[in-house]
Image (cartoon, rainbow, N blue to C red):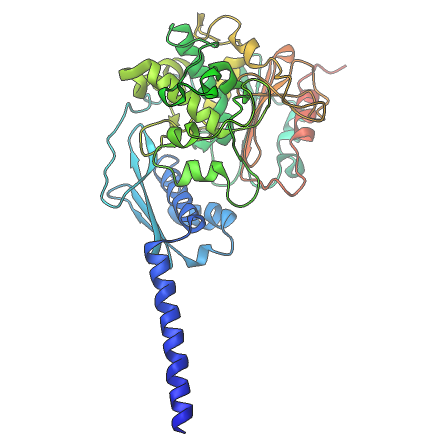
Length: 452
């Protein structure tokens, strides 16, 4: 009996030591994967509650559950409405991460007691009764073909949140998913990259940057990275090592959820190919481009997106979020409602002109949609030199001048200048279920042509 008791005590001690060790590990050195998950969810809930004005429980029940279906029940998500702050922790104890909302800045990851300063707030919503895009009044088409395309669940795709069709400068069709409407800001994910390039283009127009500019960061002086140009960053041909989406631990995830200074994280990647020779889709390159135009604009950088892009276009809902250091996350964190995203698409269709004013350098949009020769290597999609994709190589049977903004989870703005069309589709749609926007686009393009 004594031997059994001793054995029991010994086993109990081993289990207790193991539990204490696990507790200590999760408390003091939680794994990056867990920290990244709680950080991403804190920021997601914060942005959707305080920018998009969505109900917190709904966000947790849809968006968080979509991302972490098995882990969501182990997360404690605390929404502090009074202080506009969200904290997420595993089991309420481990890997706690917080995100703080700031007016005009959206949400960013913060330390436990940090309070974020405010930035330039978005423009006041328009009260004009003018037709979109000058105002918010729309005159929708009653074309049966268009209505059928917009209201077909199979064409909309699972998780659709917004579809907007612009023809010849006017919204002619729109539809929204349950719980969403024309005023709900939506995350564009990588569609943000094109807006980031447009901001760089405005800095170029202001004489602050140039496409062929090299020696971009002091930390690159004296090594081969000094030959990376602004154009290389825009075209994703910097040659810097980057893992965007391969495996469970990606550079993109670390940049967005773990790095205090996203630009420094991307800047310190090793060079693995001569600049300008190899295409590698990289959120890091986009953040470096952001940091460059922010450095070039200097003191006015915080207000630059609002003053130079969003306000002139009437994008009153637009908020471009930043990392903890103040670098805008130009690779993927622009929130705007569907009509404002459509305004940006129309701006590109008009070659960077708005209300008679040329906001981008003449020919800059043509440059953005010129192909990067190294992007497809003869096998697939073709990337443009400025944050857009060309229909060529994607299997879309669309007019040859079609170009697209594409973001994670099937965010798409399709721009067809020859047809005077801008088609937006946004949602929360898994990318491994076989859904493609192609049939939706075909149906809308067909409906937009005069009846024979």
